[in-house]
Length: 283
Image (cartoon, rainbow, N blue to C red):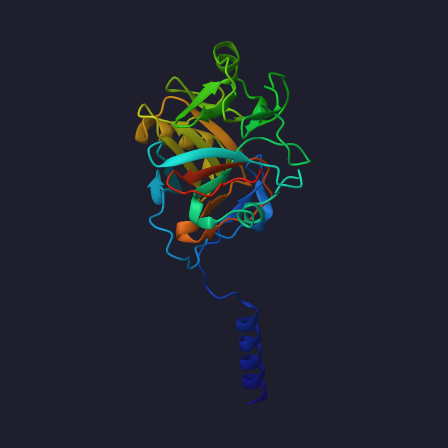
């Protein structure tokens, strides 16, 4: 009798120590693609006021969930935001969101490489003011994988160009601009150092402009390789030039769907509704 009671007690104790079955957690990855110590929660959406239809949609490519957002020059404007009224970096999408009217915003994403102070380390133009010159230096890390590139534009014309091409062909200062790297696609071809599906996988985002002038922003909702992201732009979106924006910290704010990703960010690409009267970025 005592032995039966002991066996029952041991069985209950083991059951209490076992984890209940659960869905597979999304793994947070470091910038180099290795596993981080803490899991990264999947993007969540919360109830939002009626702000009209979202410019973003959920898609799947090669079994990888992605979010694809489109900026249409007929409907949207694009600007950069990094420094607020106090001339200090916002540091997060939520901090930027607190400074604007959400009804004016189609979506916003992190956009461009930055230093420890959260300020751009490459070419950066905000509201027509150049705050950082084109960076053509050599170095370590994704930003310095040549060719890198610049996403820039004024009013309704937006482009992605390699940094050298930008330096040699663009004379007038754009209304906005941000430099990042590497250039995932250059004239429809994968970057020479990008493998078809390399071992480095992370939450990543990028931008490309199609032949019709629309800007396509893609952020992965699960770890993705450089090659997979590049092929999505080439094979599905038919984009010739696509620029990698960042990895691991990649974040999206989509007011219409109530999505607000957390994370420490530097420069922010802001897509506003063209019919909106209010300014999307602080002076």
